[in-house]
Image (cartoon, rainbow, N blue to C red; front, side, top):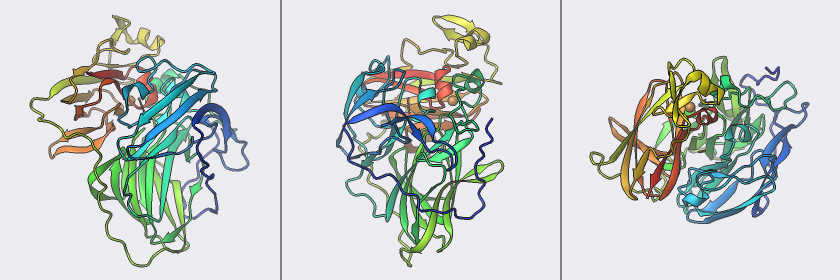
Length: 456
Ligand code: C2O
Ligand code: CU
């Protein structure tokens, strides 16, 4: 594909001094529009992209917990689009799902988003129409909901980590809709950026305490991340505080997942602290923190837990409403066919219509929901990944807990399931409306891994 190659991590700090664009007062309009971004190093032309306010990433939207977000989407793209506010337990009408919660916004059209953000934490926004193309072209941004009492840090950085498929001129590869990507791991790229930058770095003082908000905005790439030159604790996952912050040196971020870290810089002056990606060829740099000067000499106490968000506690699980979800299909999966358009189809005929996966034997959006729950009911969904691929299962409008031998795990909105893995998730269906449950590997959801639940 491209001769553009990522810099292999050598442990040397490249020249820093990169300045983040000033955060001007946000317009009430969010323009989805073509633009350019310097995704590749200097020397390459800027890459034509589609972005919110014509940039990559879109503006960081910040709001106090419980506050309102109001943005008018103006669609200046050549395609219909919408905005989904990922992870926000939102009013259903604002969830941004064309054909389910709103009509897609046509080119030249507008749509008013207006909602309350009930939970503090790290969230993000992206289109929900031809997402596999629109996100791959650069449409995404961070939505930060601020705690009333945020932990004291020297700096708070949002790191939107993306994976691009660029050609040798740093132009986005037009290979959208390729069945090979659909049936395998999704659209994997060859170029990683943080906040739209190929070599994102920020200077820090030795001993500085940072809050790092990591977000995986890739179509399909799972990032195995390694932290170096810092002592880090996870304080939140997918926006939701963990009950007890825990130390972390390596973490895996599946598409759409987030992790909030408190990172104390231990690298010494002249060194660089790193967020790295573990790759089969070694370590690749993702983000760097060159140490200049000393922020403090004595260590700080371990970070305290964040205050929990107002997510309802699970009710009794033995009387919970249950559903099973069998995930099938893809290459090397052995699926023979599935229901599509109301009849059974073989794989070949399905693939000709862009479908290669199925949930419970259905390859297109079922007319009836996977589960119909009364408001306030506790729901358990038992998922079985009977495919040869990992999947990042995302539920709209709710956060769930994975049930494990030690009890329910942390609240999440996206769960990575390895090939052959089973998982039970539980949540309180307290948000009325129609909510998608889909794989966040965007080629997989477009290829059939999509269903919905209804809360009445
Ligand atoms: Cu990030 Cu259906 O969403
Ligand atoms: Cu998937």
